[in-house]
Length: 210
Image (cartoon, rainbow, N blue to C red; front, side, top):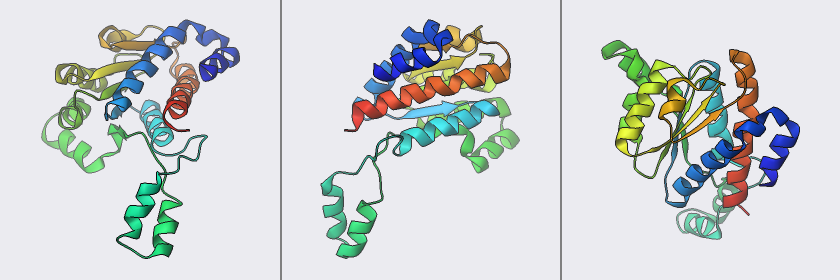
């Protein structure tokens, strides 16, 4: 809660998103408690935000996240002590997340062979499981490929989060939790998305890593 309070103190306009941020955190917390993962999709700057979120979850954000001693012990059984100590001292714990925009061969194959609008739906269909969460990022809330991916996620039993602008669009109407930041212009929406997902990532790190 400290990170959420800090978010609202620094960005008072985001007070309207407080409950939605808590709701999104709750879905992600439950997913990770049950061995799930997060699938994230967006276009353009929102694809870059998906990458940013993935980076904050998959390694230390503000904490070191050292692996448990058993990892070093397992390494020591299959390699020399120096290598075991060196690798165990650098690898960090993470929360599994996948940015669906980064699979160039698959994305271009789907565009060429099937339909560009289902590039994310195809990945959600193959990657998604019932303990997972899909995050769809769209400043308008109406990006077709993200919407189709969220439909697929719902059909597969994933929980869904929409990160949008003020109108929310089709994504917000469909998602289990919708974070609609109070802006409409694309770049202004994106400027508010960043502190929101930073806050959620910090809350998750605080929950899962001492």
